[in-house]
Image 1: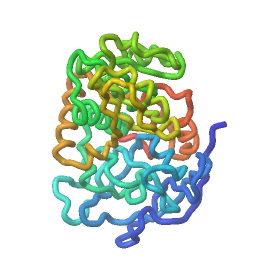
Image 2: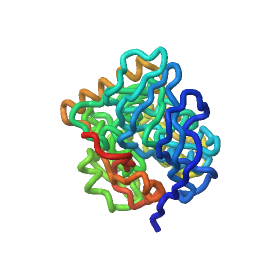
Image 3: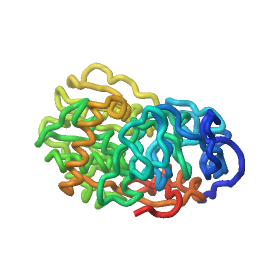
Image 4: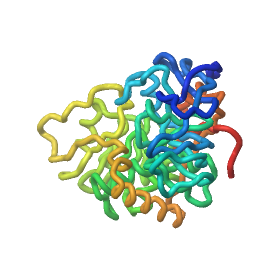
Length: 350
């Protein structure tokens, strides 16, 4: 059953009330749990502090990290009542002290560069760090601008920073029918890499091939025939858990498995002896967004791909702010198509 968010009139958007400017509609939750805990409330929004910018939010890219945050199982535990969200498109309204390079009216994208406790963006207006802003690429609508950066920056960080894939290499992408998986397939095609997508069943095979998968493996089928050669040079794993052993066995000697999610909900054990030498590590997008020089290289790569037409945001379904509970229910659903669900805030700003 799809859920509708409840509406209330209370609260403040950020911990400090210094320099408040009025109220806006925002999504918050007062207890951890399922999608039903999400409420649309009238909240106080403040003026930006040093190094911050206040923006009008147009659309929000929805990420599985927000599901974990809502449930209280994410790296950052929610401080209740909590807002949520870290990636959006918007327009600069005002800038705080010490902010250079941004002015009211600038069209921007907000990157996931800080805690959702400090700078939530599921709201009509939000206060965010100026360091989290990128100029909006030309030609993108609100939803595309909101859905673009988190997947591409995460994939770039794993394939060009943590490990450097080269043309002809072999890549495996698990749980490929999500926004990061779809972006990984695009990047693989952009780089000339042989990409193998894994999914539980065959409902999204055609879409994954269109995104860039050379092969799609369903269920627990053997990966090695689809990979070919000596095995995978890199595996991008969104699931974690005991299935990592299967992925290590699919790697070529000297290959790597990067775990960037925990969809399995189970601990990820270190593989036992008897495997080929393989590098195993975790990854978070803040390895990219937290370093200005690394971020500059990542965004240059993405903008070049956008200009060439080989990379593009993949928007799945679009929900209104009053349907945020239904959006989160869909975010957790196996029915999701490849790409990113988006929350529309207000009227389109094309």
